[in-house]
Length: 210
Image (cartoon, rainbow, N blue to C red; front, side):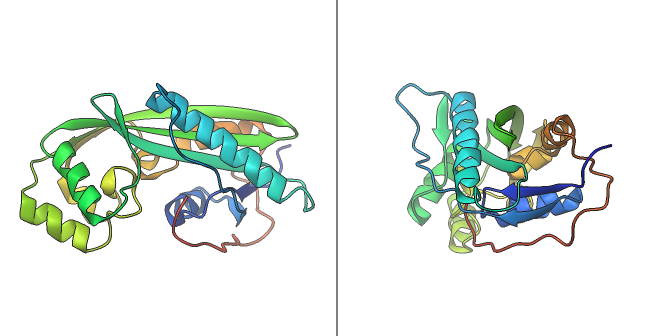
C-alpha cells in the first residue's frame, strides 16, 4: 500500500507550491540555495536536470535532522535559438527577452528530481510555446507590472502573460514550473499514493523565487 502524499519541497516558488496543492500533495518548503549559472557549453535539458538534482540534494541536507520524507527539486528555463533564457536581471533585460520571443516559437524545459532513501529519480519535460507579436509599448507595460521579473523567459503562462501565447505544445504545468505528469510518475515510483489522505494541510513558508 502506498504512503500518504507528503514531500519536502526544495523551492520557494509559489507557482510550484500551487501546482503541488492542485494534485493533493502536502509539503513543507525547505531552503535549497544553489548557483543556477549554466556551465560552458551546457544545453538547456542538461542544465535543468542538473539544477533540479542539485536543489533536491541541497534540500535533503537542510532537513537531514527532520522526519524522513522525499525531497522534491525542480528547475525551469526558456530556450530559443539554442540560448537559455533564465530570469531577467532587471526590467530592461525582461523587455529584451520579450522582444526576442515576440512573434516566434520557443521551448520550455522543466526538470523535476525526487530524492528518496538515497536515490534521485529524474524526469525532464519539453514544451513549445508560440508567441504573438508584441509591440514595444506592450512589452514595457507588462514589465512595469512586475509580473515578468522573477519568471524564466520574463513571462507567466498562468497570469497576464498567457495573453501573449497563441499555442502551447506539451505540458502547461511544466511551463509554469512543475510538470505534474512527470512529478506524479516520480511519486508513484517512490510508493506515494496521490489518492491517499495526506498527513495534514500543506505547510508553506514561502517567498517568491526558486
